[in-house]
Amino acid sequence: MSTPEPVVADESARNKRRQRLLILGTAVVVLGVAYAAYQFLHGRFYESTDDAYVSADVMQITSEVTGTVSTVLVDDTQHVERGQPLVELDRADAQIALESAKAELARTVRQVRSLYSQADGLRAQMRERRLLLDAARADVKRREEAGDGGAVSAEELQHSRDQVAQLQAALTATEESLASVRAQVDDTTLENHPQVLAAAARMHEAALNLSRTSIVAPADGTVARRTVQIGTRIAPGAPLMAVVELSGAWVDANFKEVQLSSMRVGQPVELHADLYGDDVTFHGHVAGLGAGSGSAFAVLPAQNASGNWIKIVQRVPVRIALDPKELVDHPLRVGLSMKASIDLHDTSGPLVAKQIRETPPKLVPEADREGAIERQIAAIISDNGGAHGGTGRGTR
Image (cartoon, rainbow, N blue to C red; front, side):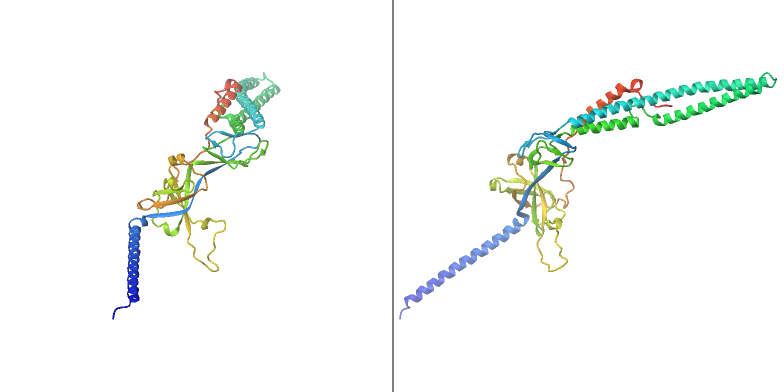
């Protein structure tokens, strides 16, 4: 009796299912082994995150002096160069203050000059009174010798002695006056006398305030958040605008705490910006690891010591320095999203960065401006110093 045809068909179908399951199981095992091998040989040496954002120095532009805005020279999104004027304030008040400081310096130089002359006059007066006192003492001595023989009356002798006492008192008064003047001018010159230095400092301050009526860009960057308007009366410290130094942008990538064990300063990083997509790859290196998690520095940090507690994986910001040349070709903007992948092969770098900035940003130097002020001060002292100008001397 032959096997029914339906039974043969079911057996064939079961065999095909077994083959398919076997193939599927084999594929899963192969993929698992391949993934494990990939993780062991390659994947474990890389840590990635898409919780990363572009940051840059946002320099707040403020005024250092009170004034009325007369000119606004830039606007939002405009690129500016270091030292380029941004805002001009009305210079009238500062100019008047500078002229007043110049006049005050000239007056002070003449006053100090008179002190030197007064000291010279008192010394001459002392010499004269010493001569008169010596002559009076000699006259008293002669009268005393003549008085022993009765040639000089006692009244005349007493008048001579009184004159000696008067001259001695006058000499003492002159010495005290000279001592008082010398206390003001001893061991000084006209240029380094305290009163002249104080007046020169006030002139420096006035000149500095005048120069600060022109507010300049502290670095190359892009203008943002401009709020200042023409005619506004501003106070020192009032925010006017911001300059963003995009050429020195970096990335703050927030990695989970479980990803940090092998991270070291100096490790290479590859990044992709959502702005450009995967077609553009940025290269950088780990500049430093944050001192704490984001929640630790939050305005209201979590208080886990009370109530029910749920463990939450913390994230720590890692600063990634970018290649400046690549930023020139593909500029980034503050706040843009990035994807970062750190190569962990080299773990010889330090855990803590010693120095991130090789050339820290500085304000625009004012050396030339200071030199011009010094020359003006020297000219005023020379013009008003007379015989002492430029060669003022202390008394002895």
